[in-house]
Structure formats: structure tokens, C-alpha cells
Amino acid sequence: MSRSKFAPLGFDCPYQNACPHLEWISTSWVWSQYQRSNKSYHEHLEMNDLLDGHLDAALKRIRVLEKELAELRAKYQALHQKQFKANRKKEIRKEEPSGPKKRGAPVGHPGWFRPKPTQEDRTVHVSAPEQCPYCHSTRLTPIQETWEHLQEDIVLVSQPRVTRYRHAQVFCHECRRPVVRAADDEILQAPIGPVTKATAMYLRYEIGIPYRKVAEIFKVLFGLSVVPASLVGFDQKGVKRGKEIYEDLREKLRASPVVHADETSWRNDGLGHYVWYGGNDHLAFFHIDRHR
Image 1 (cartoon, rainbow, N blue to C red):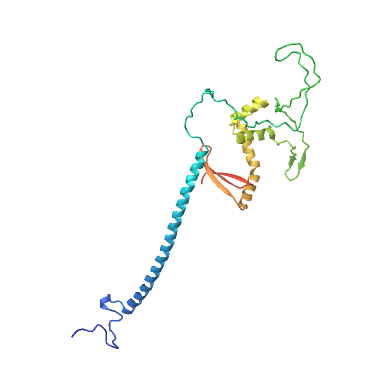
Image 2 (image 1 turned 90 degrees about the vertical axis):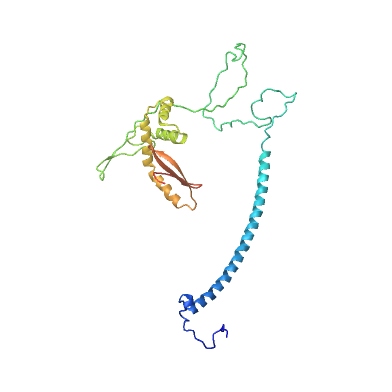
């Protein structure tokens, strides 16, 4: 007699909670896990179908973009080639000169002329010549009409101007010493004036001239003798006086809604540093630091 595949009605298996064929695992737990895995399996199938649809759409979009990119590259290359002539030697016609091309602007190119000054600082009356400057003839007849010529030039003072400042003093009871007030164009306790110091800093940092060359310019053009060490001292004092402005720029930059930043390497006293820039259309702030 064959064995029945189904348990009798009302049969209660004594190994329901610990089946020896399932490594003594509960059969109820195994059945619940099977049902849950079946549900998860169908969910994964649906997710795979959804991702496959997204992948197909992305691949189609990539093919369209690649085609557009190839067309744009072809158009760009054609446009780029139109701007330059082909690197081929042209046949020289018999009527064209075989010599070198004439230098200068192309034919029809508008010329550039210096604009005339809007103001005149002085007028110099020049007497008529007694001898022709071209043929050196002395047969000259005066003409009633005059010829005017405007010329711009810089004014150099060959010697520095030395100013003696006589200060009225007052005694400060808090400091317990006499004090004075600086004039508008004076730096107290400084033998060199503010114009010279500002010019030295401009030549050094805006134009990029070394300290020794700046000292040579002062000596030759203005007759003022300074040493490069004094120019370095000008910079150090300028840094101290501009510290408040520097900190004010830092705080304004921090409060700005948009700030662009950049950094690059920088040598300071022979050591590697980094100079940081932060700014926008209205502010520019630089900071030199040993570390990044």
C-alpha cells in the first residue's frame, strides 16, 4: 500500500516547531519567510523592469546627444577653417611685384591720431627764424599768419624740495608731554615725505621695478638719494598704517553675497607660501599664508 502524500485531517505534527529535516528550524517560520521572499521577488522584478526602461531611455538620449555633438564639431571645424587661409603657396603673377610685402596697415584701414589736449597750461611765443632750417637760406620774408603747435610733456623737478615745519606745541596732561599736529602733507618723525613714499610703492608694486632700480630713478630724475633698505622700510610702515583698511576689506568681503576665490604659490623671504584672493566686482582681498 502506497504512502499518502497528505497528512490526515486534524493531524498535528510533533516537529512543527523544530523539524529535523530543516536543521531543527520552525516550519511556521520557514513558511512565513517563503511567502515574504515570494513577495520580494515580484517587487524586484518590477524594479528591474522600471530600471530597464530608464536605461533604454538614457541610451537613446545619449545617442541623440552624440549625434548632435558630432554635428557641432563638424560645424565648428568648418567655421574655424574659414578664418584662416590654406597653407599653400600661391602662384606669383607676372604683374605682381616679387619683392617683400609693404609694411604697415592694410589699404583703407583708418589711422589713429592722438587726441588734442582739452586745456593749455602755458603759451610760449617763438620768434621767426633768421635762417631756413632746410636750405639754410637767409632770404626770408615775414608772414602775418602764425603757426600753432600743441605739445604734451611731463615736468621733472631736478632737486627735491625741503620743507621746514614749525609746529605750535601744547602740553598733554594725560601723556605728560608736549604734542604737535601733523600738517596736511607731512608725516611726523619722517625725513622722507609722503609723495616720495607713495611713488616708491607705486613703482615697486604697480610697475614691478626692483628696489635698487627705484632708488636709481629717484637719484637720476629727482636728485633724491635713498637706499633700497629705506624703500623696504616705506613698505613696512605702509603695511602698519593700512592694517585697519585691510581688516575692513576682510569684513566687507565676508558680508558679501557673492565671493570668488583663487590661490597660487608665493615666495616670501625664501620660503614657500600661498597667496589667496577673494573678491567680486567691487572688492579685492589678498591674504598670504604659509599653509593652504
